[in-house]
Image 1: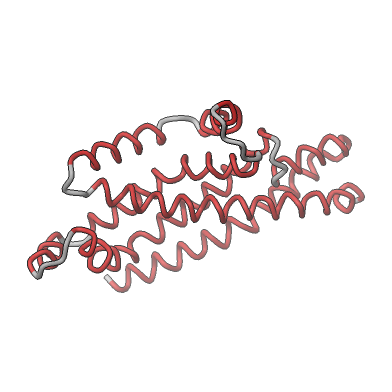
Image 2: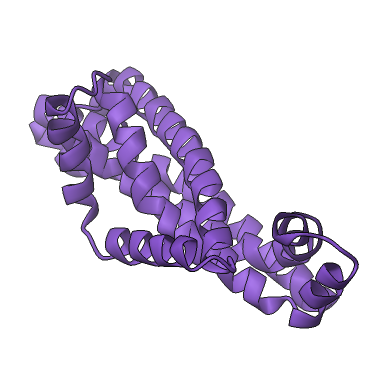
Length: 215
């Protein structure tokens, strides 16, 4: 238990950093993902092509490679952010295509007649998406989005490889400092991850049941 007590301040610091990475990257990925999803269903071929290439490229590139690019290549290109900000950029870029696909599936779940009716009364594409399609898609989109954010929570651990002391990085330090209690300190880290992911999973399940009843 001494290892747990001594490591708790370090774990709390890492836990807070993980929450910050999750919050900042989650908001960024949501904003970018919604824009990309809107482009995927846009009537403009150039936007559809760009969104398709963006989605397929980033979904099929390992997260480690994306973060490596952000941590080491972007600084060479003159981007002078610290590693935490660069990790947020990488996590946002990597997660946004998954958000986009979840949102697009929600868009596709709205009957096409709704969009046609909106266009028939004079709404443009942006108004149709934001005022008619998106509000109806929200209930279908939230459960898969929460699953994406659960995956993002676990993906923040990769940032620990690039000098960001989040929860995984904290557990590495604790394991080095208390090599005689490695299993205990790793279980402690796993428990703290569960503190984040289990409530998210329960929320997703509750919303999914509510949506099923409404349908």
